[in-house]
Each structure stands twice: as C-alpha cells, then as structure tokens.
Length: 449
Image 1 (spheres, rainbow, N blue to C red):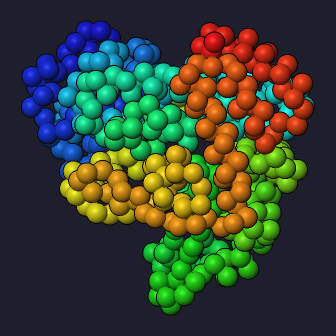
Image 2: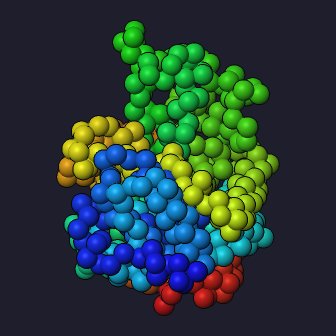
C-alpha cells in the first residue's frame, strides 16, 4: 500500500500550482472521505484544484486515497490528490478545510456518555450534544479541534474552515472565542433533511415554499413559512396538518412525540427529532419517545458500522472508485459559492450571533440562514426569537458558556459548574458522584486541573 501511496502523492510543486487546495480532515472516516471527494470530483467549478486527505488512521486513509485516485484517473480529471497523516503538511497553502473528526472509539465512548449518567438517575435522552454526555463529549473532542485550528491559524490563516463535528454549537463557540479571526462555519444537515416533510404536510412543492429557520444547533425551529404562489403565510396550515402527519405511518419513523408537543404548546415545529431536541430540556424525557430515540441510535450505529465494513470489502476487491460519489452535504456548494461570489442563500449554517437572534447573548454561535459571497458567509438576521422558546435557548447559552470556559481554562471546577447548570440535572450529590466516575473513565481523553 505504501508503494501505491508513494506513486499517487504529488510533489509540493504540483500542489502549489493548483487554483485551490481543499483539505479534508478526518478523511479516514470512509463515508465522509469518499463523499467529500465525490462532491469535489463532480464540481466543474473546482476542476484544477488540489485535494489533501488527512487522518491519523493510516489504514483507512490509504483505502480512501486509493479509491479517490482511481476515480480521478478513470474520469481523467484535472485534480491533484495528496494523502498524509502529517497535518501541517496537509494544511500548507490550504484555501478550504473541511473537518469531521471524532475521538475513537466513537460508539463505545458515546455509550458510556449515555449509560453512566443514567445509572445515577439522569434523564438525558441521547448524550451527544447536551446533558452530562454532551459535556464529556465536548471535553474530549473540542481540545483536538482547537489544536487543528491553532495549526490553521499559523499555517493558512485565510483559509475557510467548515466543521461537521459535534457537539456543533460548543465547538463553534470555543473556536470563536479562541480564534476569532478564523473563517469558521459549522454545518449540520438537519434542517435541509427535514424540509421535505413541510412539502408533504402542506401538499405543495418545496419550490413553492419560502422558509426561515434557526436557533441553536439541534435546538432550532421553523420560524416562518410562506406559499410563494399565494404570497401567503403557510404556518396556519402547517400547524393544522402537522400533528396528524407526524402521528401517521407517513410521518417520521422514529421519535417525534416531543416535537409534536413543542408544536402544540409553543406553536413552532422543531426541525430535528426528540433524540436531539430533548437533550436540552429538563422535562424533555417526559414527552419524548425514549424507545424511538434509542431505536434511532441503534439503527444509526448498526448502519454506520455495517456500511464501513461493506466499503472496506469493496475497496479491497478493487471497486473503490465506484464508491467515490457526491454526498448530500452543503460544504462543496458553499466552497463553489465563495469561489464564484454566488450570493446564494444557504438555509442553515452555524455562525457567530452578531445580533442574528436579537434576544439572546451575542457571544453565542447560532444556526441561521446565510448569504454566500467571495468573502465567506454572511448571516441573515432573524430578529427576536419566539418568547416562549427563547427562554430555553438562554438556558443553553449559560451551559455552553461554562462548558467552553472549562475547556479553554482546563478547569475541573468550571466543568462541574457546567454540569450543575444542565437542565437534566436534578440531584447535586448524585451529579458529583457521576462527574467523578465519568472523569475516571475519560482520563485518557480529558485534561482538566
């Protein structure tokens, strides 16, 4: 394999002559690496670019690299491919960076994040982005992402950085505070993935709907929706029809009980499932579909692992090039938009809250629509958030503030304060015991003093 890699690695001179250098960090995650390169390959705008694949897992990186090399050669494309476990080499002269890293072993750690707090009576639903699990996920993954950003700040400070890693809001806030000049944006596919349901609920094509959505990542709602042909507010029809739709077989297949409750009591529909939205609410466990949430997690885990094994087998059988296909994420369209000064609107990105949402703290990162220009992404102002829901966002603002502060200061004391602030915590004594146990099982991944 090393002989193959030596053949496909281009010289630095070749890489430097390209118009753009797109670095994919975490490329050894097979689906992410193959899909990202597949999207570049299918972009006319990005022909003439260099792609740098980077990961710390050499074995998986080699598999992705071999597949991408074959795909580029088969289509005779004007793209250079570089593959390296040396991050500083990957970042040299980078103009765009796409990050999707996770601390391994991902699912084993995620299950600890969920099970240990539950042992102490905690009512968290998922444990990925909020609750005690979200805290320890943050404590593990944010420091290595800050190390990556430190290298970017030194090597290619003008590059545009696109992040897919979770916990999205906390990662973006930590980067905003430590590296405020970086061109950093977070992307999540939840809102783009949910909009198809609005079309079905309202029995009209998506092209006939004008929408605005936002909040915090995994904690946002559809704020407005209009029929374009009638120039009419569509929310009354959505409120009328959505509960029945979500309750039926044609609705969401997993967990939407909490989503229905939010729509019924607050008048706005979240664009995620119970398993994420309920992570941030003290009473979320009572209204959420726990069985559906765990079913969602188990199916996601099984699909991810089985797909990874299938991809490895196909690559080893010489069929890797066929797997290099475009994904459905928005990173490459955004890069194209920056290159072409497209001024197109992206429906959902994560950017600093410079009065985007005007009734929550400015020192946050919010999920919102944005305009893509040659200078990057400019958030579209959403104004005041609905009064009932904004109280929930403000609580999370306080939690996120302490989580990020504990990481930047490496403070065990502040991390525990963040845990006590979390809305899923009901018993301080048990929280302390839980905290100490989770610190112990994470001692190889977390540096707090």
